[in-house]
Image 1 (cartoon, helix red, strand yellow):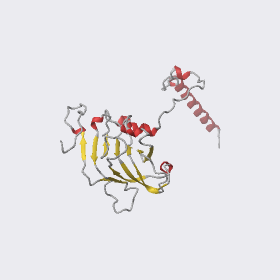
Image 2 (cartoon, helix red, strand yellow; image 1 turned 120 degrees about the vertical axis):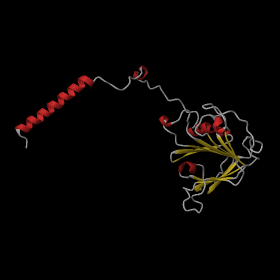
Image 3 (cartoon, helix red, strand yellow; image 1 turned 90 degrees about the vertical axis):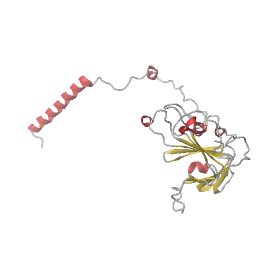
Image 4 (cartoon, rainbow, N blue to C red; image 1 turned 180 degrees about the vertical axis):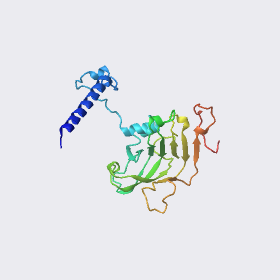
Length: 259
């Protein structure tokens, strides 16, 4: 029930809050923490501005970032099929040769084959000096890809199919010249933009991969994701002797037996 006393208390409360806000607005109301807009942004647009056209696809940009801007992977003459998949927080980009017209199977054979996996990037404030997102690349003369469902055409790769396993095979009789012919190449940039710090693994293969998380219930579940019975050569230039803070020294490629 509204009594005269309660009415006076209500009016006094409104008056007190009004006076407090007036004092706040008078003292602090003119402070604006936002920066001033540049003069160019204050002009009204005439509608002629258009974003620059994209000359290459995001997939080709990632291939150039992983394998190099002049690598065969970015050239559609050698790698006619290029597509990417997002798996969790990481991105997988695949470039391969001619694709069967109608595979109608969950296994597809392509030649050549290259894959790049981009690990989730760290926030800038958590990165060490010179640290870049981790990139792992794989290249083989031929690959037998296995998906989690039947592939009818390449459009299925963009919709529902996921790559769950593959077999990498070396073939010296590949159709075009490539210094990587005859071996399976696996490289990791070790979170560094310096190419002299890459970890390189070379083997004649074959190399097998299986995503055990996608193949639950198999007897091999819990085993290694990547394995091979062939000899493996590992080159880690980051571990070469050098002064503290200096770049990794230039090295000449050579076989482990020769070294």
